[in-house]
Length: 457
Ligand code: HEM
Ligand SMILES: *[C@@H]1O[C@H](CO)[C@@H](O)[C@H](O)[C@H]1NC(C)=O
Ligand SMILES: *[C@@H]1O[C@H](CO)[C@@H](O)[C@H](O)[C@H]1NC(C)=O
Ligand SMILES: *[C@@H]1O[C@H](CO)[C@@H](O)[C@H](O)[C@H]1NC(C)=O
Image 1 (cartoon, protein in one colour):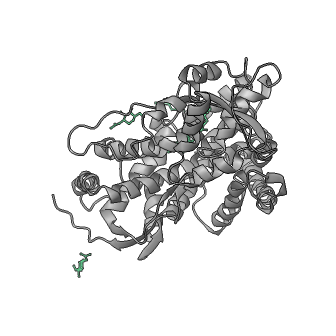
Image 2 (cartoon, helix red, strand yellow; image 1 turned 120 degrees about the vertical axis):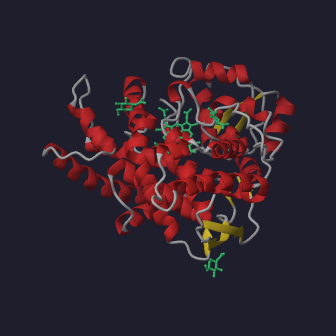
Image 3 (tube, protein in one colour; image 1 turned 45 degrees about the vertical axis):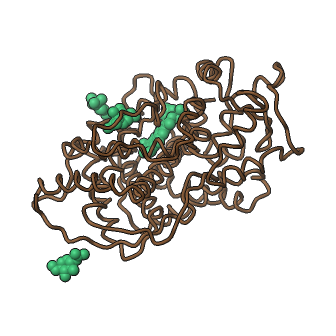
């Protein structure tokens, strides 16, 4: 099974599972396991792991074990013996042989939440087909010609509702959800999408009810919420399929999925159920990732006034060039946001200090991370040319995140409107946490004040 969508959502804790299950599911019987400590019966070292990731500094959990047992060690977390590898060669070998020597697997608590037709459970050709479909849906010319306009509009719509005090993480999540609903199925924010989002949040909670999913009310509630979400989406898909059979076509992901079914070429089309699972998986893939990066970018900028000043200068220049005539950002505006891209890269890098262990990227790059993980500091160069990113927060090869440009554009547009329309100060001290997801403890509350828009160069 391919560690597919989930891994990214699980850009946080659960992906730990990937790494491990990857190794274990097939080899347990055949191979001797690397050295390690199994901890208590059944729960193993889960609690130590969780408490490490609940602190601001999760590294010692790994470090201590690497010191005792070497770069490849076994532990027992989330109900399974689990191998951690901090050895680059081993990780490369595993990835290359995925599906051959190794099969990755997911705990059933997770696959139940994602749905049996989720991309997560796909392999081989079907995965390839769905991957390339997603890529061509979100490639840069599509963003430039179709998606950017809505991204810009929906970001501004959200900012318009801001009053003196907001939880930035909440707003970032609302924005990301709104963008995704629009891109997938042409829905603008409304009561229906907000109700769906609430249910969807319950589903997401379910991913993190470890170590005892099946005994947990959160998990039970998540399964129920998934049912509600699926039911709602199924109605939309059914309606859209009827429209599409009448020849109406909307320019969104659902449209692309129906086209794919029609255009033959071996493609037999997708059932409603498959489409619904696919949509759920895409929601999961883009939601936490994009919204946490939006939030952390603002947090890091706030803590690095020189970088904030430079970003503001860049964005105000863009705004000034546009004059009052047009608020809407264009593709060439986006392309001219050079420093902003540095900020996005740097935020991804810092956020990945941790995700590297846990998240999708890090199925692969445990080792690369070690070189970053101790600095915890902003390194985006202020002033002089900024360093190109040396690692790959969006994965790579056949699994390169198909949403990477979309995420960059969304984050950049958000930063543009934020800094040109508002000034802000943190309302409370807030800190980064890495469990169960990478996030800030208090959802980053800020006081915001609308700036007077003055157009001057
Ligand atoms: C800052 C935001 C994001 C980050 C850091 C991120 C990161 C990643 C990473 C590292 C992978 C590779 C996973 C692996 O190696 O198995 C991935 C895959 C994926 N991402 Fe993203 N992602 C982001 C946003 C998005 C968005 C907005 C979408 C929505 C279109 C998206 C859709 C996907 C999909 C469908 C895959 C699976 C690709 C495949 O394996 O075929 N991502 N993402
Ligand atoms: C993007 O995808 C569309 C089809 O959805 C395709 O026609 C176009 O050539 C692609 N553009 C790029 C830059 O790959
Ligand atoms: C940001 O990172 C990407 C790769 O992730 C790289 O291609 C790009 O050049 C970087 N941009 C800047 C301004 O550092
Ligand atoms: C914005 O401008 C108005 C009058 O033009 C002024 O009263 C107000 O204090 C200004 N606000 C800020 C935040 O500068």
